[in-house]
Image (tube, rainbow, N blue to C red; front, side, top):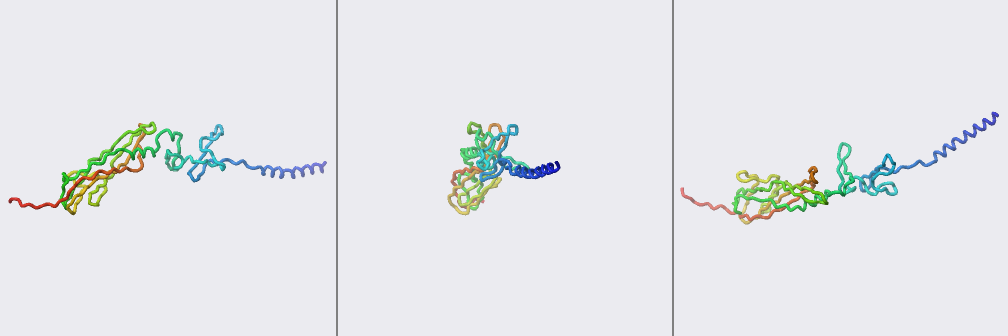
Length: 245
């Protein structure tokens, strides 16, 4: 009887490691990655915790990595910027195709029919003196606002003069953020060194902002420059004349 019990114990001891080894040899289930990076940017997937079914996202490839990212510059045309203490990135939203993209708005801004800035020259009448401070200024200083329809959305565009480039017609120019002023407040002046015919002109550079419907104003990246026409200007020498005394 004791021999039988000892034999049974030995059999159990011999079997246990084998069953343990067999359990260890079973492959552990692998889970599909939920986030990572590829050449297109950052990608992620998510699941519905109540159903266990995959959530919305790009279909994964054979390696479990979505073919297209859901965040980053390559994610979509209308990626939404999200910034904060721990994140500074652009994410796609469900309504990317519901309205104009930033590229659409930039294109509309670049195609605005903006009129050239008005250039005023003093002395007037297209005549000035050599070695004399000829004064230049513009009255085109107020923002220009217009409303356009883009993909069924009402978009308000606003163009604001930001930089003025003064071309003096003798090969020289200067750029300022101020529009100049009429005499006697001489802020933008130029001395012509020689007599002759010149064609000064003004280029106005606009910055822009927009809003969709009654939404908040947002800046439009980039600028638009409108070149004005040249104005005739003749520089002459002053002729001294004797007057009675």
